[in-house]
Image (cartoon, rainbow, N blue to C red):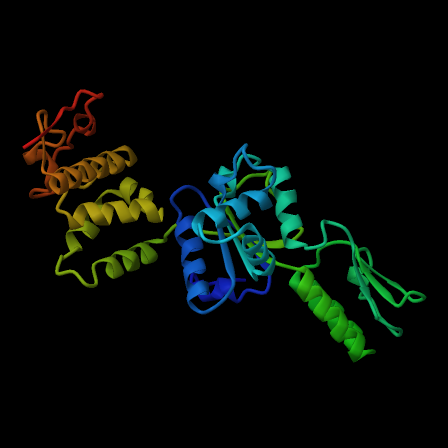
Length: 333
């Protein structure tokens, strides 16, 4: 079981994984961190955002190849195919955003993980004696006459180890042959998705659920966020302790990030999930205006209401005043 969010823990996990979490829990951030750390250390990693898998692609494999070609215009199709085939870890980000989300997508992922076109793996040169663990006899058979081990379906890493250890106890040479064949036929996959009963990768992976922040973790998050700032964030923590609802909302990493950013920019702190995104929208518009020297004829965020002033425990500001339904005018100086 993984107990660390350290990307190295995901890179070194022997099993494929299905990482499940709700919106804003940090799935994409984690996937990209794993990819970047793997590439920096010379690992062959393939990252694929599943939202790009659409009706123009015949298969998931084709969608990944097209994505690789788009990322590196100078690369030919053969190079992209070779990279996908040789990569040691395939990161599938946002599986729930793919066009075929559900059992059909799961089947395609299994095909990519089990490099045998979903058929059995035949390993030649395996001689008797060859012992098959009892737990694997529904997946693995041995043809003594043909000196062939037949593996009917994908084996998890722990199952592969169990099989090789069992064979090695009687025949080390055959065990080496089996281990090499299995290593060449299996690709590790980490699939990131929102939870769904129609998306099941238990055949090839362990399941990992990203949990929401506890109070201790939330405090640690803000401590790290403001560690290089002179900002005293005690006011923010006091606000969250006094407003349990917004503290519960902040247990999602994305929301905690927005709230920290609002406080850092001296913006009004939200008192509901709706206000979190409204105030964030206001702040982004202000940044846009400042960067492009834009003045609004009708100010989206009034100067007095947009900034954080005095005690946060006072009257609630109207969230709806921040967004005007398409009537805002932009004029340049």
